[in-house]
Image 1 (cartoon, rainbow, N blue to C red):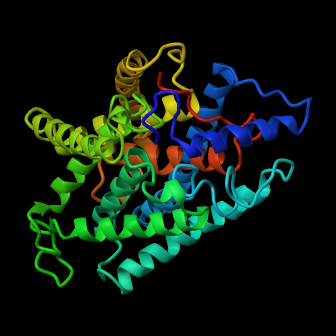
Image 2 (image 1 turned 90 degrees about the horizontal axis):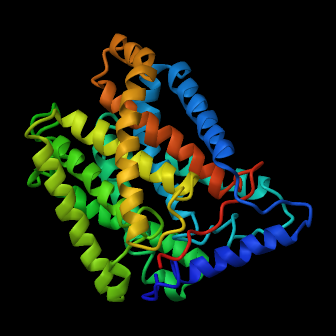
Length: 383
């Protein structure tokens, strides 16, 4: 991140812009125009349908006790391999081993294979090496810490300081290791009281009960994304403070706001409705509005007006999304309940939103270059 309001995310932004120019110089017949809202709406609906089908037809016990807790590692590796951390290394643009004209299959299949590999190797390591806990349900509690730290490192810290001088490989591998180390440290804050695993060898016996901490971290993610470098407020006004002070203040602000939303919301709504239905839907709408629809229709504004309009639009969309999923998720919830698993419609909805739709659309956007639509470009300058 640069302290200048005329840049988006520093060096990565310049690399993304030059890469996108190269893509469209490849063929004069290729239309570089941003797709219309109708096409983007259809794009989202297609991934919604595909995600619903996967959740409905994959055997429910395998889906909820293996695939979904393991998918936190897919989300982790997706972000680590994206332009914000590794620059797309090793296979994708702008800094991976890819050049315009080589098509979508090398970055798409290569990066997806690495993401699937991480989703297999990561849970095996936490099960058999450290901290040696069962994947279900503890993988969810570990996974939310991993996901939060991943977004914090990419969206708040911009991969700093490795992003400033290091090679893409060092940025990717080093950034991934930083995230894992911070995750392991934060795991020590958790305790498993109130669960069947209380007092087990892998129980960190920290100050925060695991399920309560899960909800807190979801609400912290809401604010990490709201003031991230690429969504909603585009890190306004924190980029004005310079590094690392802007990142430090942004971190503290996200934690404080997340804690306030979690604690206050618990006074008048159930925990799962608070973190899963409300918090999870806001996270999803921030992602869809920014990554798919490009802040439509507020691109013409500068920050903070753009961010304020984005934020309130995303809140309204979250309310619509909650109502929609109350209908769409009913058949899946029925299967979950028949399997005797402890997931209500709120939790099923957030897993559908973030672990399927968001994961699949971002893989397609980053690594399959949004084909057959033109590749999405970097976000505009905040000001």
